Length: 79
Image: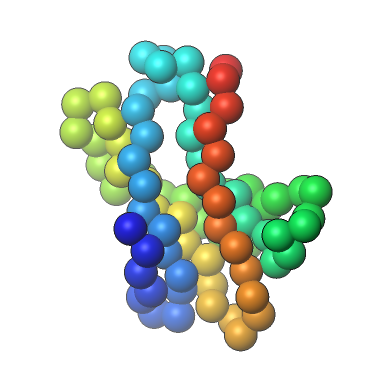
């Protein structure tokens, strides 16, 4: 789900418990799609748990809308 609130761009997504799946899912962001390094939670973006339903967590990734273009991606990696 993509939305905006209080001058923030918000992406909401779901991830299963990595202890169950062996896969870590998280958000990252950058100003340029061609960037080799994407920034993580706490480095300009806030990733927050919105709760669990069984072993599925709802997560929001929020990035301030400051007039500059930015991109958020959701990544999955094996642990």
